[in-house]
Length: 190
Length: 190
Image 1 (cartoon, rainbow over the protein chains, first blue to last red):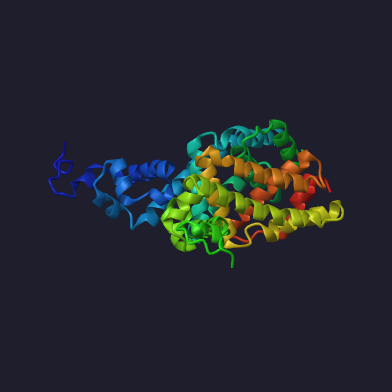
Image 2: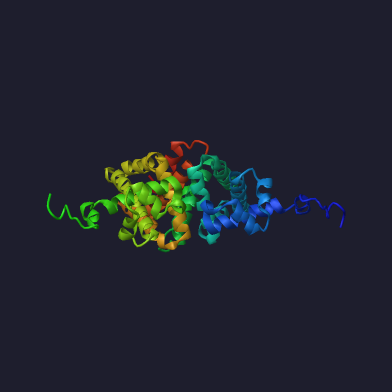
């Protein structure tokens, strides 16, 4: 252990715990999933992350910055999975199958993803300053789709994925996979 | 004025104000649009509706019943507009134009509708007991579309409307109408 690591200053924790800001962002998403954006406070996140309350104001200018960082990370994580799925498709037929799999299997496959997505949408509906996050998320999805489809088709597919996954998640009746296959075929002309 | 209307009993207000329950439901939607589901309480709605707090527990078994009634009314109001739009279409071409108008003009044409819809979706994402409302809303939209399209096409169109309207509302770049026209054409084969 170096002298720096054992820094006796009160502020030492920040230097010896370089992952703290990162961990606060992750824990913030857990808190949002649990109690919603409205119930998420500096105090609640600090307690859940087991950091002093002062860490919150040290690392973030306020709740808006923390929420921004948290939802940006969430969107990036979901987009990474989306991109991996599209990247593995070798041709147009495989790309159409990948889109079907994204709709029927990937999106909202956990209660956490379903809740966090809708918490973000509600926040962005209320406060346009969060729409850079939804904009970046849509842009990445479209870029991933454009590996295989023209930009117009990619935009339509992205909207179709959004609508079909929300309707599947918020319905109380089962939705068959064949409707998804058929819808993707109609949009892509495959 | 009859004796009944001038009922001197303390409970008379309920009988002389038959629209009170209705008004509370309307005001509840205003409160949700303003402060969100999480911030909506009996006390807040009673104050906004200018009724005694006791009216809330008299008319509703709890917040869940009130939220249920409020969002059911909201879904019904939006569905009514949707049905009127589809009912005026004389043929398949007019029906396709009506769907384009619903996407480009009707849905989320007010900030209130955008916020209330996403508040409902977030609530239904968290609590499946609210999915009877989203289920009934989707069922009515599909029935309205089935005036002009087969059930499979109606289901796809309903999802497409959902996805395109959300993406238009939560983006920071403009979305052209021609993509909507083209997407509706591809799904309906028109």
